[in-house]
Image 1 (cartoon, rainbow, N blue to C red):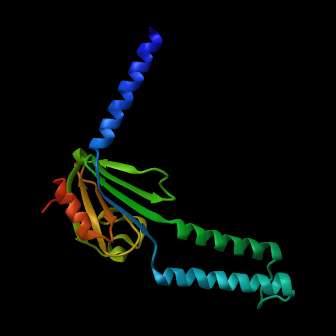
Image 2 (cartoon, one colour; image 1 turned 90 degrees about the horizontal axis):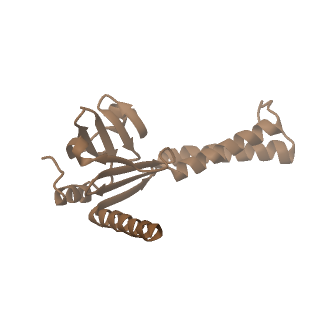
Image 3 (cartoon, helix red, strand yellow; image 1 turned 90 degrees about the vertical axis):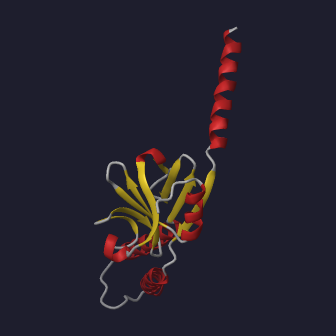
Amino acid sequence: MVRGINFECNVVSFLYKRSKEMSNEVVFWEKQKFNQWWLWLILIGLNGLFVFTAFEQVVVGEKFGNLSSTDVVLLAGTGFIFLLNILFFNFRLETKIQTDGIYVRFFPFHSSFKHYSWDKIDRSYIRQYSPLREYGGWGIRIGTEGKAFNISGNQGLQLEFNDHGRLLIGTNKPEELNTALNKIGHLAS
């Protein structure tokens, strides 16, 4: 008898979770990656310099300029620059708008989505912003206007919370985001 009750509880629990997932519709999803050409130019230039220097010193046997570093230090530096490239290549900002709130993940800093429920958000609206002036650049930033998650561009979803906190989430799809927020009735005018 206990086994049967346990089975029924598991079925009810599964059905409840499933119905909750189905009612929590995703109305907007955006995935952004770093696409600033100047950043990639700097990283590729550093890669080229380190690879050339390592090749000259380790393979050819000639020191590059007045370098007095050992082969190990030079190879470690080259490896570090390559790891930095991989890190920048994997940076991504994901934004999901669902009927129960906003989900944001800035990978690799957030392994799972951060959830901001609608009952904690006082106002949400799309706005233009200056990443350098307001937040000091791109990434996970804290500035005069609050916190920001941004990768590129100058458009974002501004959230104003009940506790007076603010969060800006950068977007490259402001019109689609605007439509999604209107659809579920969570866009301030």
